[in-house]
Length: 317
Image 1 (cartoon, rainbow, N blue to C red):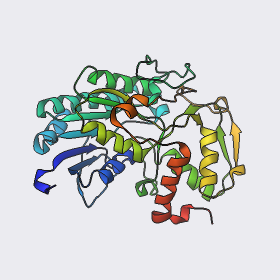
Image 2 (cartoon, helix red, strand yellow):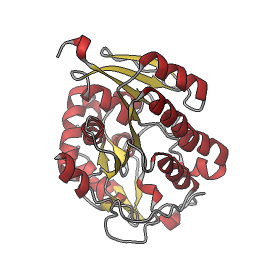
Image 3 (cartoon, rainbow, N blue to C red):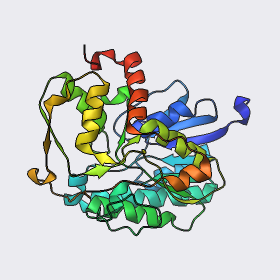
């Protein structure tokens, strides 16, 4: 495809894990533009710039200048405990910003794919949640994300819900906290702790279908390029506890899993409640788009191959 004929993709949050993966996956298909808030990022195939999505006029200006065909919003204030104590900031980042993006998408005619969260559920179902299950958030983070979803409800746009997104990205090794409120994703955090031989206590009573960012990125692009709209669950195929995931990662990367001990979520003092079960059923998205999603073992193989090439020091010697 000639560069002049490429459609324009705007990745909101290109410096985050999922945004980074989307930019990498879309390089041959789109003319890519990416935004960051506090953590600068540069790509050879992407025009990046700073943008505060809570500022309506700035968002409108960027949309007017770029006129993107497809917009993927990967941004959020993810720090669950911080959101619990800072409602106004949570609403600005997770609800009001979505409204600004939606309004600009409507004005320009862009297709919007917005990434939400499994934390809209209360975890009482105990088998994977489908798109038909009613949401009952336990935390204000979940509430603010659900309110963001409602802005797009019934529109021509798409909401995608993943669960515990993880994966390899060199951007997180610097340790700079992003505007999402977290310096690194769970898998990289685990690797850094294992490499330092620090003892770990991981909960056995919180279950999720951890989602490889690479497959989430591909799914967002596939769904975004379609004519379909609505709500889709996109997650990993394994439903397991944080402890089970951690042991698998340790073994996959050559570390001694005996350094990981079991604990309960009740042993931690946390300001916000978490759902003890937030596994997702992705069968709707798999059926409609032919998505290739992965079990934890398959996904960790992919992540390990990337780490071997770009950060082999994270592997056990």
